[in-house]
Image (tube, rainbow, N blue to C red; front, side):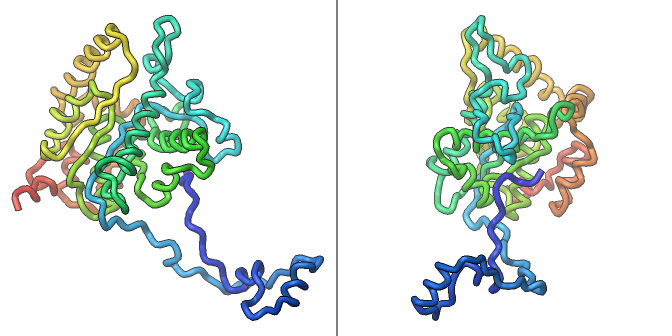
Length: 334
């Protein structure tokens, strides 16, 4: 799918520019004639005019040093390319494709977890634009990370749907042009990582995307996800790829939960989240790799992820093995 943000406008050719404006030397009498003319005059198209290749320069990131990752957990279904999109509220639960455990429960008063997903996106935007690290131009890139994990129901990726949800939220708040989400996306400071199928890939693939866009690896990483998943990232995922422990942080934001629901969430994370990754840090075993495939992972995707990057990343991404030659490890020894 093409990005929602419109591409930068191309400069008009001379003949096109002359359609809407009179020549600079026109007299007031000539201007009046044009204004009162009862016909739509158009200069003939110059069929030989070709826009130069450089009219839309690629984004550059002279000051971007840090990475903010929002881990995606569901899919906002409305497509921002459709005319009715401004009417589709991101706070209306049926607009989301949620797992059963993420849905609201009127009997217990549990709200749908789509509300916390919107909070995650907002926290990422705040960190990028108004947080303590926010600068002009931004010193960070915000990456929304999540693949098309429900291909049997929609081809939409979690990452792109979160961006759509951010646009819908801005529209609901009265920002008719998409607000800061659209502005930062169009400037290239919000990126979509659309391949990850689990939390380990959220981290690794976002690092690789940062490197591809900026030409360097981030100095610091902030991961925005649920609080109860912090240990998984800090104690397992980051060490598994030998990412320096003093250069990664988790900003945890949990759903609204009762005491019982919190206990259930913590127990579920320990048994179904932390423990499997502790036993299989790179996710290459039958259990975790099987979950990836159920969510749409295809091993052929890996080649594209490492194209143009350091050779040491091939073993990590393709084979699931780690070496001391990884770029962020080697830089520590320089």
